Length: 105
Image (cartoon, rainbow, N blue to C red; front, top):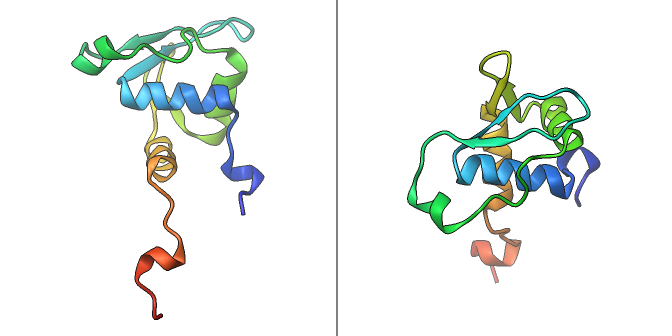
């Protein structure tokens, strides 16, 4: 069963996914303005795939901040936190049912 504290809005999920997979960070803006994402370094994957949404809506950024999935590295830049990486990794792994675990038949 999925609990409300484990779910994120689609916009927040996409922002977190882009920040992890494309190695991007957010640049802070005033509360109501979207926040642009900037690559930490250029890599092949960034050339192959564009972010889902750039800039990211401020409501999605606030959700990631409230959940502790991003953290400030300066007064204007935000990166994925350790808990953000853990949440992403749990969500990106295939779900295993009990029957797939080799239980007794």
